[in-house]
Length: 354
View 1: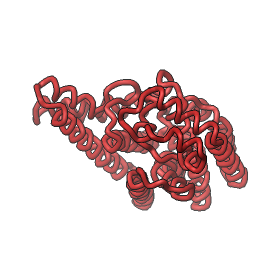
View 2: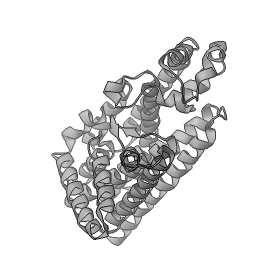
View 3: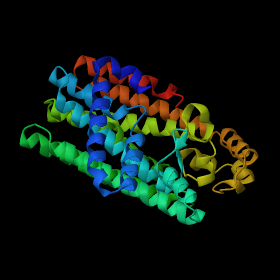
View 4: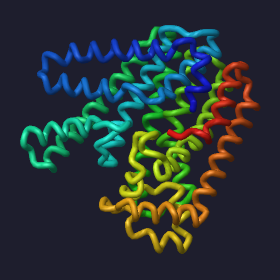
């Protein structure tokens, strides 16, 4: 896992991020109190949505900043926290798009408010609408909050401007990637389209932008910032491809996500794109994209992905992207500690189970 390689370099930064987020949500809850209990509950759900997780993005911000600045600072913690707020917002919106009511093994924001609606006697469809609207609004609030945190950093004006540009660009690209992901449903996209979607939707805001933002705040050169963007793209693609494999073959007790959801949704991953051209897929594909897909049908789809060679092809591509990241790290003029940590991250990215 990323955290296992980077947290040694951060010197307690993860704790500082948690403390900042605790304080941030406490202030928002205090503001919300004058607008009624339901709005307070929305902020409580948003706060709980930001709890837990791997905190990869804050770790990358803090590691890059510390490498170039020679240590951590209050402003690097604030910047790292902004990326966690952004990540939480994207998860909330993604759950709405996917009609998921569970995240990390528990009801997500949409799920909480849908259950609340049912408890108040609403029909299920109206309760689900209430839940999804609540999640959209919570995500919107956290995106705005992340931008405000970055805009209020105590840093030279040009540094703040560069950071806001990085954040704006990663939001822009993530939306483009998400939109393409939805458009791909049922469209049988090819390898190039899927990889472009991954680079926009995941790699940019999860790896490239946090690394680049931390480096900019730490005073890195433009060349180093550009190199970190390239490294982040390779790591992000490998990370998402591993997520796609775990989404179909992973253990729900480990990942916190059902291994049926991607198959029921009909998610057009590279696994499916590769498997679709094989006859075994045609024999098993009837349940793909069906909300009624059961365990037996899912087993048939998994078997088709295996026998078609699609899983092996994706695994080889993960290895290739990790190797490309290692090569880019070696070619970059980065501080030794950051170079070492990113190299270890690239080499262990293929092994994670959640």
